[in-house]
Length: 82
Image (cartoon, rainbow, N blue to C red; front, top):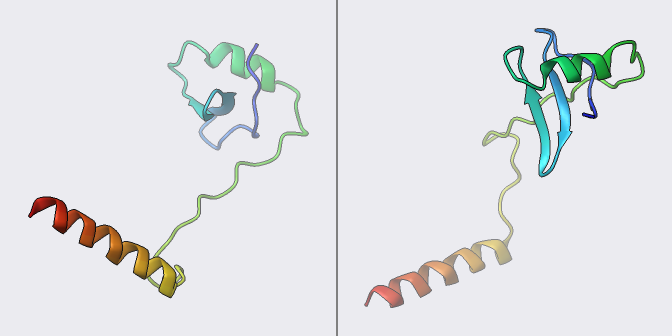
């Protein structure tokens, strides 16, 4: 038995619970009939959240400690090549 975790997508496909995260069940997937049956009459399913989009404007700048860690990792890689 599959567990549908979000309301059906606009195209009629589903996202189900799957080991390791959600799994998108398309119309041609063998799990589609089972997912459709599990979602039938389920008005309580939440909508799928919008994916978060990151850009230079929305991402916070790195902290000093993050930059220092990146520099240390680069220096170690350079030393390993020498």
